[in-house]
Image (cartoon, rainbow, N blue to C red; front, side, top):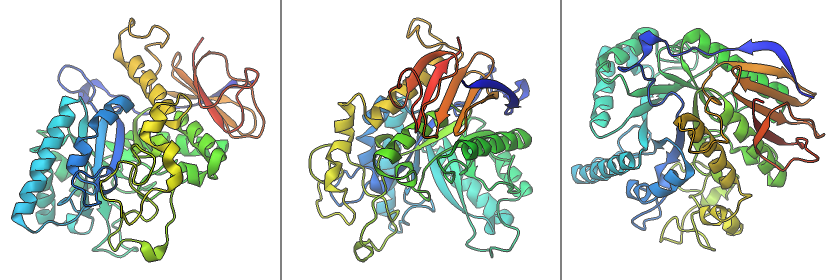
Length: 441
């Protein structure tokens, strides 16, 4: 049986002096971000490349999924998307962008944006001012937050530019002080000098960890301790533009998919901000294409366009049929349309987990009485003792319990009422390569 241990890790609480007017925590405090590379999501004009209007046409899907924020990369004129030199083309992009942000806000979705930043340049006051102008330019067009995509284009790997130094980062934050509800986050290295400056540290710990309980627990514990030390909100992800999707990383096929389902419940049980990479909720694997057929522009290498519906590629992504990297023909059962019709699909698991989180945070006892309101309220993470190859933790004294089994044997669950499991229980026990959520008894 999984037993409680004395080990405990906490993350920084939102104190009264940090609160927004009215004593509220900011909108991003526990937000679920849905990361989208615009070029691979949905094509509206038939040129074979995803675009802003294509995303706007698919916002209903994101409402159905239950995320809080769309996190955009590949947007033109941001430093991580194509450059646009023609003024008329730039105006067209901005019109589409403003239509997107307006429609997203009408759907109660926030919009966050990747902005490319050269770390070495940012040590110059003029570059700092230019970045501030850039951020304000996009906030004026409805952007609710940013993830700074830091690069080293102007510095050597040996130089002291692993991150933005504290003075630079504080100057940028001070210049945006009137936008106190805007999220500013960044990917981080373990001990980077700029930790503690931005609102959220999006870390890569779980995106680089094997499917093994001790390693997963160590990665989580180390990041929670670092966020407590530096006073930032944890930001979690298990895949992304520079990391293999978990289905492939954890072995591929049925085993990889089962493990991906399990790590999803661990991810969504943690305190902080969570980033879901588009296609992750469909359980998509990586697709390794013929290098000779790769496009000249960088299209994520092993990523292909989002499969939406139908029985043949490109599965509703575009009216064009000659895409450089079309989805495999055997993805017919992995489209969003097919998975919405299956209660056992990866998409259904994500929707159930996000619905539990949303309901628990809604504060309405009548909405779903079976979901306790306090499940995700406490940021304290308390670890339990567990059999070899397993881990379990609880959110506070009466919060959610999450158990993970990475062993080859089924194991008993900790005491509590079962809310959700990534695979059917076997004789009331948690099978290998699976995870479960429970409410404290």
